[in-house]
Length: 511
Ligand code: KIV
Ligand code: ZN
Image (tube, rainbow, N blue to C red; front, top):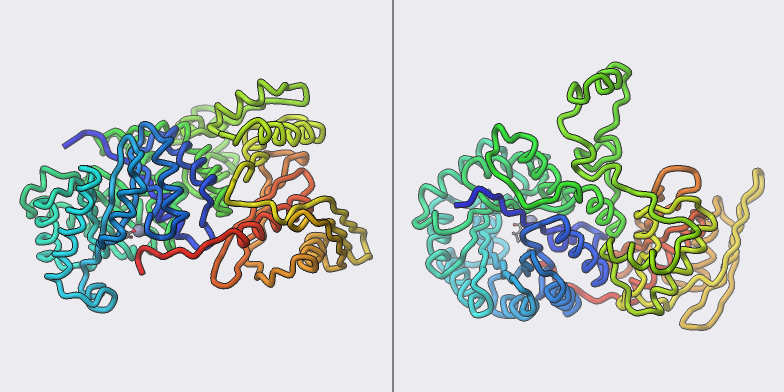
């Protein structure tokens, strides 16, 4: 047993299962680098058998990550486990996480397997995984609704087969802290050799108790918590990393453990994940919401000014608020820009890409006085992302709005290198712009979401636009940033169209 809680981040796998949150390889690489900087112990980088693109992304992450363990999920089948094994091969520390459902409802209706067959499959999957790494994790999917004697039996068998981490998922977010803690206590007391493995908790948030349940598991013997940034994940999401980590850190009187997380990286990581996935963080979200440390009432403000601890249990700077620095302005040079990119963990593909982004930085610096880290992150966007082509590219645009006149937009696009022009009139300039783009592209896609967020404060801030499009069952997010939000909107729309164009079919792990 260790006094450290292992933080297993599954933003790139369970988080990516949030509708529309699918990420390109370059986006995943950026998040993986940031997760390593944050100090997570294990990065679940994806589900290799989902598609060649997923396997490639895990493989690329495995090549660049040095300290964190890189893990791939695999169903308990030979094909999945071998795909995971190949994908993590370059990793300094690689893990295979294999799973099979153990509840009567899943075994009967989803797997259509007898319990004996499920045990045999689990044992075999662990053995295949051990051919690639000795760091093998086994999950009993839907453990929350599984029968205790069967859980004890399957965990006993996979320990004998060589699994080192046993994960107990509340797949459907059904438990409550009291029961979840009890489940860990019983399992650890009953499963033979339970002290030879790490017990892990993986909780979903359907009843809003994912973090509380995870902490109850920790109080009853779990030493690994599976979680995601901003609580992203399937349906209502997973336990939020920031909540679990800050609860452990803030309530030292209860949790006598530590994590390897550099908590000052929490907010930057949250912002990066939010901007890449297009999932905004609600303002009142604990730790990472914009209002998490804002005091509105006069009595509270007065109290905080007199003595911060009157109303604050954590310090905003400890979780990375206020760390955004004015890094550059219009006089900053190329060398300083390059070194700032390096500090932000942004790797561009060669000098040409750097020149291109630097030119955009200069244009932005002409329009915006102070440039923050977040501006640079947005500026880089999908630069150098080989998976996202610029088949559809904005050449120029004009949008007109005036009171009493129907807004009008005119766009010139390059489509596969050939220029096309169109114009449209609609209820608003963004709508007119999208309509003009559609006249040229004729994508037939459905707009599921359109949102604008200011990247930094002030009226000269860049607006970051997220556009979520759906076509033929695929859902993609497009991002665009500019000080002109109509231009940012056009860029986001085209980014989404380019992603739709480049997409591939993927399997879902739990289907
Ligand atoms: O929720 C779940 O059961 C999972 C498993 C694959 C661990 O995500
Ligand atoms: Zn899950």
